[in-house]
Image (cartoon, rainbow, N blue to C red):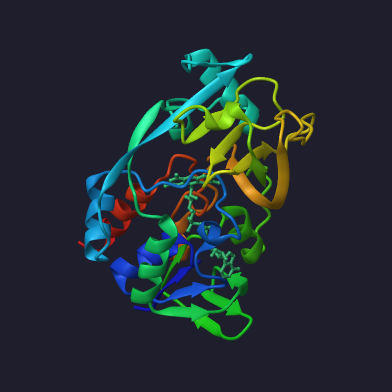
Length: 291
Ligand SMILES: Cc1cc2nc3c(=O)[nH]c(=O)nc-3n(C[C@H](O)[C@H](O)[C@H](O)COP(=O)(O)OP(=O)(O)OC[C@H]3O[C@@H](n4cnc5c(N)ncnc54)[C@H](O)[C@@H]3O)c2cc1C
């Protein structure tokens, strides 16, 4: 049986690591390997992630990540109402249950996720190619460099992109793009506290600021109609770079293809279009295929 994994982000690499199936990647690393870190990136401390790190020979020390909520000029405890306001600001809608952006703190491994990506890539069979079309009925992928016939295809690329490759029109998927602005910032508001990142559910044009090594920060803006993009709010801030992530915030999670019929498995937060999917969910799912 010929199986391929499509997409070389952390999801595709984890799938390639556990299954040994070839990973077709336009670019290894995906979202985790941009020019500057796109907001907070943590590998949560739990048994699935710990086992992966151990298998890769990576140190499993942990740290507590602290999340601040800033509203109407002061730091506050995140009430349910504020969490809903935050969700509306980022996605235009409230999604049920707690998301990681709504926790006050959580335990995470100290390792930089880009190191995990590099270690995984070393262990995977990677085919450097970009898929430009997929024939679902015939189970064939057409790449820029080669043609790939498959029995099973694991897609980890953003679902709207996958649907585009198959030629199936798909108007049901909705998302909000995220604009990330890297900046140097010496404002006391940012540095006079021990939060690792700060959420802004109120009127500020951005919804989150992540602290990197001082004085570097990353602003995140939800590209919503009606919200302006401006970092003038904080004094002493100089923008240095920016990046637009098209499929940034997933607004719905409607399953749109019957994968089993076509020999397709959808995996990962953007691949399966599930805003709650984290690394340990990916590991759990992949391990269930090989057990
Ligand atoms: C601001 C922000 C913060 C986050 N923080 C966390 C966090 O703290 N912890 C956490 O677990 N998750 C976090 N996430 C989610 C996390 O970033 C993603 O779940 C994860 O990095 C996505 O990896 P992925 O492999 O699923 O997708 P991607 O990284 O998007 O990888 C998809 C890959 O597919 C490739 N590709 C696309 N089209 C094609 C094609 N046609 N042919 C070949 N290859 C193709 C791309 O080049 C890319 O390499 C965060 C997300 C955001 C936006």
